[in-house]
Image (cartoon, rainbow, N blue to C red):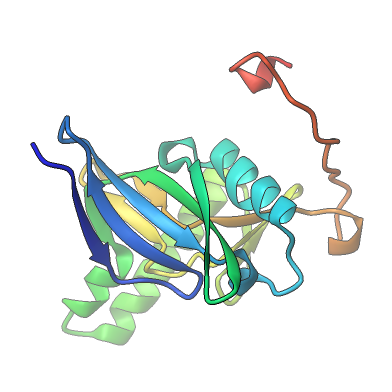
Length: 185
């Protein structure tokens, strides 16, 4: 089977492509402008939060850093994620008769799931918080309901709830770990 790229609708921070490898396995490839998420962000913020924390909290949709690029004078990360068969929760609103009711229903589903899965409370807009983390950008296009009935966070923006953000969590110093299972130390 030939490798194939197809562009998906893109978000604010990423150009998004579908890629099928020679074995037929599908991936989503994103070319991400990390500054579009937060103009004050650094590349290390992107690695700490958008890749490391997101991979830890949502391993089913983990990012793999595959490269870097520059476009229009902006440094960008190139990452890939597993492709999940399913529907964005936005889909249910677009197909509903009563759009307002359906939107509230789908937003409640996210709130209930975030409470159950991460013990995170809704904090306004598209944000949730628990004791350790702040989850952002969880709108109906970034939460996917897979064909298996499970929810998947396909564009999780997360950060630690540190002193400056009303919490006590701390980032560990950067170090290279030889053991592939980083949870064991």
